[in-house]
Image 1 (cartoon, one colour):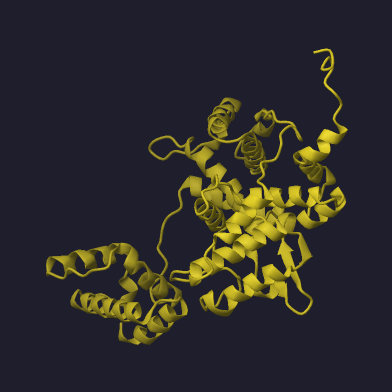
Image 2: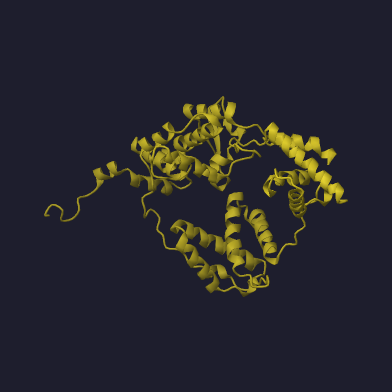
Length: 390
């Protein structure tokens, strides 16, 4: 392992590990090399099972300050990236083979985004896994409409009406793929029933502008986590970005000279929005001192090593923690988007202006926010029949 020491040290430094941690992990690399030599093995023979055996042998000889399997994972990751250790050889099951084909079909022929592909694939995996019969027999040709309806009924119990509609679309997509590939003889997509739910039937959940300001006022602005959280909250509250749009932001998306920011939204759409001064200042505070250095061009990265782009669900965690500080009810990132739309509407702009800010493709989607302006609605509401007589 001697030839891998410097490369491993540089790799760890690039991924944000501290000097003390790097020294300990390089020491573990040396211990693994000694263990392999004593067993007559080469570095290419290393695997998850052999690392587990290494840890067990070290424990038996009395070494107690040992990393766990998770702590040894970076070593194996680096050696595989450096082509020292071959990737694990796992024979794909019939189910996994179908899922791989389904993923390629969604990307190559449907042109779906990565987030949509992941969501569709997760639903397909859950549904098809229920069809595997012991001992691992997978026969999609035996699927029936009853199987689809039973799965959908179980999903409807635990998710909202909007998510249930998504399950219908995901199941129909899967059934279309299976039929096109000849894996099912019938077009079972037509057997998936629609989910009841009417557009504009509900009032979008929102929060008062004063509560939004409380989230910002109580957010700490020191430390990497606090400064990053404040920048994320500013993007949500002042520009109405979605969680995935925050996670996708890259350094090149901000044009500091023109004061604009590029947003990659739904349907691979890209829009440019003016960058408010307070949002720009929050981003500068994060980029100038709190953001860890690394090779990624994403703006927001993890604060702990190994440093990499944040996931969209971390944006929700930031909002949830922000609600706990002033003692407000927990809300999600999308409710800050609703709050921005409602407050903008109360200030007087037309729905068309709000649609441009929120980047809606259909003006009917923006019309939903007109329902939250209760002050204006009271001015146009007609008296209830018989109210005067009562």
